[in-house]
Length: 303
Ligand SMILES: Cc1cc2nc3c(=O)[nH]c(=O)nc-3n(C[C@H](O)[C@H](O)[C@H](O)COP(=O)(O)OP(=O)(O)OC[C@H]3O[C@@H](n4cnc5c(N)ncnc54)[C@H](O)[C@@H]3O)c2cc1C
Image 1 (cartoon, protein in one colour):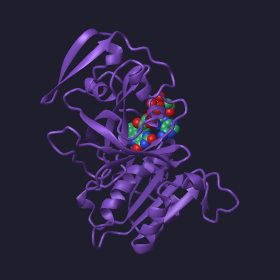
Image 2 (image 1 turned 180 degrees about the horizontal axis):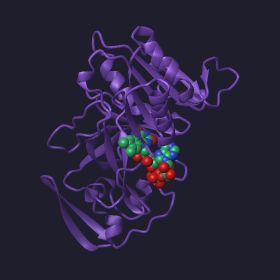
Image 3 (image 1 turned 90 degrees about the horizontal axis):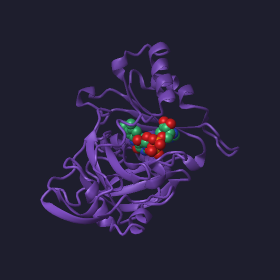
């Protein structure tokens, strides 16, 4: 689910303005030459889009920004798995106030595409005190925005707004055990919460059940295995839906493993993140098979 698609931010691509335009950007004022409607070729990267139209990248991004948005600069961009790109972002490039968020929240990225500037939501994968902030983006092959995000390189800039969302661990949960269930990049907000939680002395027991297709798709595997090795209160379980013969662990969809892991924790709060079908099925089995009240099931849907 995209909270809402394009339309918020003014776009040089869409505007088709002629001549020079001066737009206010917070305290600064940015002068941009806009040369008619910018032709865009499908598959072109954002940097290509700018360079082929004589728009300096640094200047292109600010012209897309509304006052509630802030500029972000890519610090690092690399593959975490064959289909997932890690991006780290400097979110305080030109901002008057530091970017603050609660573990589990998401932000909107504004991305120039052939259809204009599109906004998409991305969960922040790092805990609140870590800078630069970290994202993980699944390459959706037929998608409009995610393939473009996969072309970003260090030094590129975009705009964002946020943070948003209530998929967070409320302090009132206290010592309640936690079952985190994520598939694919649905791991991101759970990793942010884990990074926060595991630093708390005497934190409640937490199990992460992570579902992906193959071993190559297991994101942040070394880190998660290191966390479970050093913290007896953290259990990390992976379910592979397309395992190869070398895999000794759980197989199938996460849905098949939720009840067992939940019962092992006692009466956990369950946090589920990923695509709608998985979330609906996990919610249903928590209610029918485990008898959980819906207040104990927290979810974030990506589609
Ligand atoms: C609160 C929230 C947080 C999100 N956080 C993340 C995140 O951390 N990482 C991330 O990669 N995505 C995340 N998403 C999904 C993201 O906002 C986009 O929907 C996704 O990148 C696809 O955008 P697109 O323009 O490439 O595809 P579109 O052109 O918008 O859609 C193409 C099709 O792909 C489907 N689709 C959407 N997401 C996926 C997916 N992950 N896998 C397979 N199919 C998909 C859509 O339902 C649609 O049918 C989040 C969404 C929400 C609502």
